[in-house]
Length: 432
Ligand SMILES: [Zn+2]
Image 1 (spheres, protein in one colour):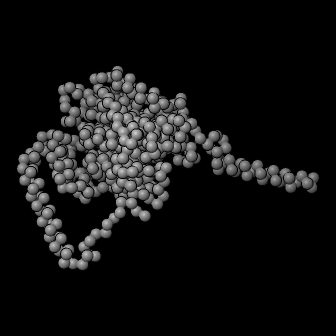
Image 2 (cartoon, rainbow, N blue to C red):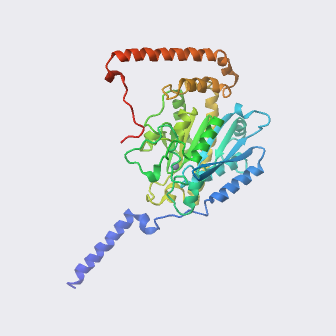
Image 3 (cartoon, rainbow, N blue to C red):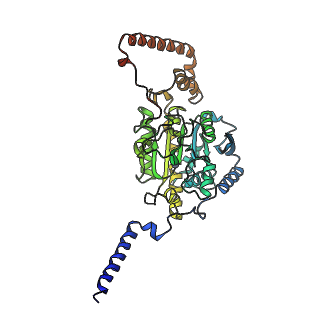
């Protein structure tokens, strides 16, 4: 007995320790640490693309598609773009409201491409959206052209399907949401090349080149970059912890707050990407869309995240793994997208000048500014803006002369003062 007592104490504490450990790290003990791709819920990339192509084939009256291919240094990428437009023979698409949606920019976020398929199925009326007035919906859809990129990062996605469940970058290790030119290449203290490699230069990657061309030629009014990892609705900026000034920012924020209430039960984080996600992101697509392409409503939606998943269990962290959550995510976010189409159209209808929507503190040349805001916008805002075209050349010339003389005056003024007072600090693109 004398010997058994300490032994039984030992076993008691040993099992008690195991119990506590299994409670704390429940996932590690009760199930394997890596969840494989749930094939019963998710399409393979090949099947998903085939399904989308078949869908387009069944609805030539409203869906068309195009595959864009490009490459450099022996690396090639292709992106399928599906366009939804009704009655396109009668009405010129450039007079419609244009929406550009991208899914699957990060390989491991499989759920986003499933949402792309669901949206296209609803747009083609093969699936329906509950609680949505069909007459209202039809009226909205008639006025829209929607371009959907169901899988921006096909090469990265294939790596995930081959077993690299944590891969978010493209087929040669570049993060496609860090490869754009706004604030490109800046690295935070906690920079992890596995996650955020920005590439060798802005637009070094074929995928980003394709998306840039697409956005600049399509010139959308609404851009949504669809991701997963958390539940959030972000607006610019990703590279700063602030949102832009002005009316555009105000409209975007109030739209997101309404969406959060309507479709996310107020669970979603709403605000600037940089201010809300917990880190600043440099060289992102949404910042480029807002700052350079001048898309008045530029968003990043994060549609699902399991915050309790083990950090290495990427499939589970970024994608729902049971049928109920899978269906809930797809139906909630489809509904959210259709609300965006409707309210976005409504909001933008009332605004005819983009100049009032964006802050003027932007790093664009005066030519870009005038071209972008006043000349190039004539197609977007119809005849109302065409009046401004008359005499535009003269205004531009006067404006340039005014700027030039201001610069000269400034230069003369500065040269009389000490250098330290007038010269601005040169900020390096890449901090220490
Ligand atoms: Zn992502």
